[in-house]
Image (tube, rainbow, N blue to C red; front, side, top):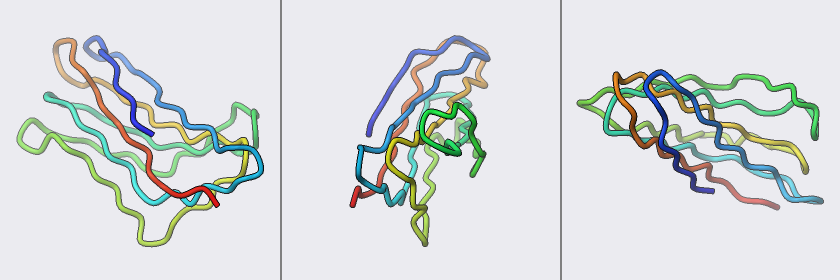
Length: 107
């Protein structure tokens, strides 16, 4: 699931993916990128539509290394109706486009 947003300096944008009903997502990878500095926080909802999330990862990029790649050796199982959320924070001093992709397989 791919998403992009133009985010003001020091602003944030959420990229949410809700697992399809009657399916389980095997979360395998998160990718993110920006031309300037950014932070991502990967969270998984505790139950369908609970609105409460647990943080799984926090990663930062740099202008020298603009891409963030989180490859999971063991997939994380995410239940039907639960959201995977990538919070993208623009740590640069100007507005920029922030990109992210949530990857996995629904079974």
